[in-house]
Amino acid sequence: QVQLVESGGGLVQPGGSLRLSCAASRISFSIYTMGWYRQAPGKQRELVATISESSVTNYADSVKGRFTISRDNAKNTVYLQMNSLSPEDTANYYCNAKRSYFPLNTYWGQGIQVTVSS
Image 1 (cartoon, rainbow, N blue to C red):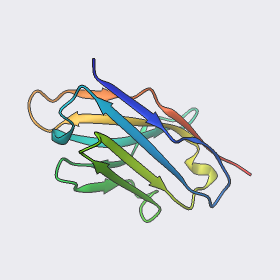
Image 2 (cartoon, one colour; image 1 turned 120 degrees about the vertical axis):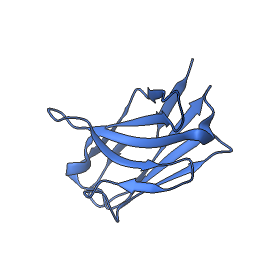
Image 3 (cartoon, rainbow, N blue to C red; image 1 turned 180 degrees about the vertical axis):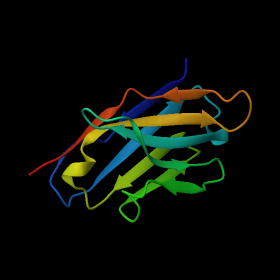
Image 4 (tube, helix red, strand yellow; image 1 turned 45 degrees about the horizontal axis):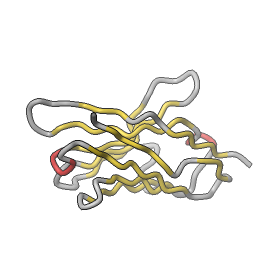
């Protein structure tokens, strides 16, 4: 059974930083596009960032210049470095794995809470 396990969330003050990690198991990690999504209370889940199997990255406009997504294929792990956090970044953050080739399987982690508050 595929597992995506997020870690690194928590409470941080405005302007602070956090690094999220997502460890994947039972998938051929290197052929998956990995991504981070978030969902705030009362809002739809939205894309934060993705990184392809060739490490091409894509970011939501709201996080460009503040967040950095990276991957370590040797550790089957994707990271999200979040800097200059603001209360608007408060949400549940979800790890996503999308296979780059058929079959286009997609998996989600259970989510991890990030709260930005003073």
